[in-house]
Image (cartoon, rainbow over all chains, first blue to last red; front, side):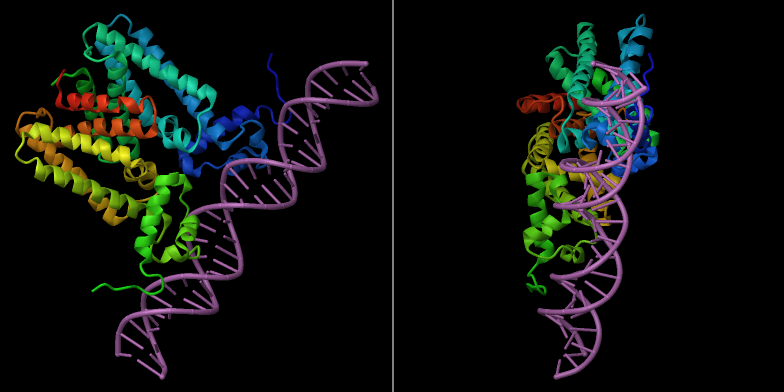
Length: 200
Length: 200
DNA sequence: GTTAAATTTTGACAGTGTCAAGATTGGTTG
DNA sequence: CAACCAATCTTGACACTGTCAAAATTTAAC
């Protein structure tokens, strides 16, 4: 049952795709509703029938980012099920960093100021972001149970700080401050050590 | 030799002060050149003779932030000189977090996208930010020498990752994601433990 | 006191997000 | 098939933004 909407064909999805492309090429500051409409070939206000706001559009992009991230994490969980937990955790962290590295603009939208401070997250975005964090907490709990992570503090607390560490690294990478691209691999490993609390 | 400039009295400084106030009250998104001019009582384009750009204005604010942070750090170094290094390091970290907590908008400018990605840092800002990071690296070196921090990796590498941890926490706090205000003290302590690599 | 430089203003332009009103199209129902 | 309605798209408009150019004003220097 492929329903082809009215005039355009499937504007909503087309807009999302085009917006994501503009985002990748020029960053958020280069993404305007009008340019987006131009690129797709509709009038300036056409997008407003598919996204209430520019904020809503950004939220939709971020939402897609969370979904993608979610899936790649699930893939790791399944494929690495047999291995030692610690190995798959490392893979987890590397995948997380890789995502931030390859989709910096999307990552910035997912966790950055634009949505969470300047704007307001939509309901579905709020949900999936919470779910995403819960996914992380589940990992932490497992690792605590197996003695790989501290259980001196609660899973929540450990989850917060470890994720802060990971997030901090990603931000440094994305914002390009105090960090060189060549250092990334090395720092990722270092970060894993810190999280796992190993000296070497 | 107090030179009172031409018409206004001391526009440059007045603008900086007013801009910082607007920043605190409404965030970057509420800070426009025109509102700023209005607030100070000059015409829209008057600020452009004291700051080349809006970008230059933001850089000036960030620069002031670095200076303030620098001074509070220096104060710690002096006053805590006699104590054990580790104690003053903890104080250092807490002070850093406190600054981010009390001047979130300024902190966001200092390390955020607006200047480092959307805009371009001015020369003086670039300098003081580097100096600020070197200040941190000096701490790391001292702590490495005293066996408080790992010296498995270089000071640079350890400095990067530890600062990433600290920065990550501050960002979480500022952006208000996955973290409650009440958890701050607890998380700060936790973060110190992680950095110092102590399990409890 | 005249000249030059620094400072401020007014006018203008392109760009932004978004609302209101009208035009067009498609699906649904009699 | 005809009529209606709702979804979709366009045009026009408004307020706001950053910033440039040219004119006006004030101060400093000689």
